[in-house]
Image (tube, rainbow, N blue to C red; front, top):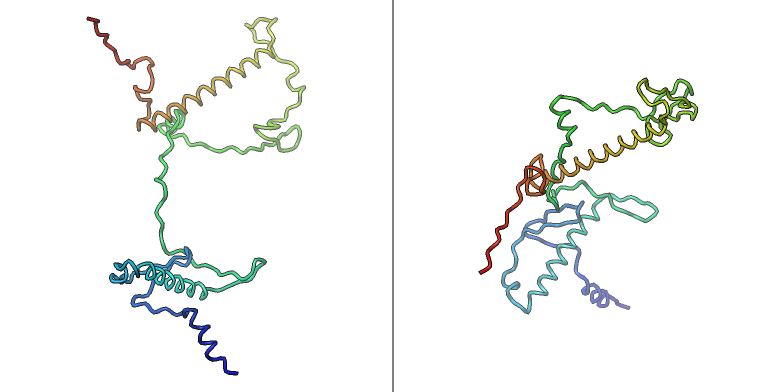
Length: 223
């Protein structure tokens, strides 16, 4: 039984994997991208009846060339199957968003920059001679002091002997924490103002504090 005609008819349904181009395509296989610099067929592109078919043929041919390049890559096998190893990227893509602006310096950072002070990072864990082990310098379990370490607090010479030194110490700590919070908020406000105005100090138009003149409104006399 001769099946040549059947095979030829079946083969005619599919286009060949070889595509001829006047100018070879440029590829960036890492991005799975092909760049076709060949000129368009202006006649077929201008013809409304043939435009859609022409664009489909052009897309199919370029996709086939890209797939041919992918099949040339070295392959490896893993649990998901056979995969190709992509080469390094050759195209440089532009950024989607502009570069971030430099973070505004805090008052301490400005002072340290002027004085040439360099921040030295201290180790978080410190050696405790009494316990003979490393303990955190700060944070959870920081210092890890015994409750009996401060069972007695010396009363200052000019202080009220009836004053509760433990309560006084706790109050001073609360004040220090509150002062640090205010400093942090001030630094955040100044950083925000410098981002808005492009300067290191808040703009006069942002608030109505001392030194900032509020706009005057003149009242018209009723006739």
